[in-house]
Length: 323
Image (cartoon, rainbow, N blue to C red):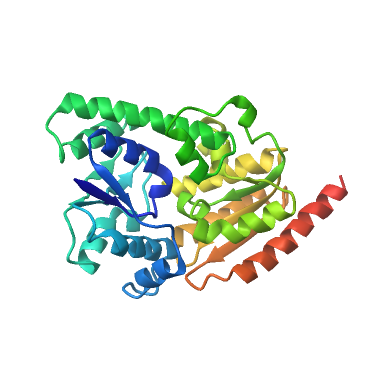
């Protein structure tokens, strides 16, 4: 039995958990290849132009693997926390895939809708997913608990400063030794949705340009969820979108950290939530720390990104020289 997972969107948040869960049930996990220009072109040719880049990339990945698997895992994430929602496109993703990409293998498209208790909602979701492959509830429960341990290792490794790809590989065994820890250095923070931050197709030139100047790139995962969390009263306005709230809270945390010399804010053209988030972050941070906002679409220009990042880092260095 083979289950396909497109390498896009929430892959960059939950893949270690998904991989361990399915493999624990004896199911082979089939991944699409890393994102390339062709991935984007394949997705773009079938979708309306006003859809965001991450959705087009996801469709390109789905096209690549849909004929190679027995099932496609495209869950419907509605709420991952109480009183906040996911992007409407993520909620409707299984329906979009069915409408645009027939014929398809069966979709595992169960809904994740958090009520009051996040942990119990997640557990119930995976018990339902497990029923697709076995009726042995105890087996599914045991596999889920082991998958959660893998996810915990993955999060801890990200906090140590390892990249997404490194953390996936290292989390399959044990935690790295403390002397391998990469954090503790001053660097440039980068904020965005996980599928902006960790897809090499989007971030490669940015990483090279920043690290070329001697600054490590610090993602939100370098801090724990508890460290990032902000009292909603300080935001003045409640944010009802989970990733938007996460971006704003991260911006506040990074702007207050002495280890962060500047912030690069990634957003997707055509994303209504991002347009609001960017302006709110600018308002909250004001001039406390250098801030560069980069908006991308399918006409992604690595050269223009590099030029703007280079100018931004020169500003960061000038501010440091005045200290």
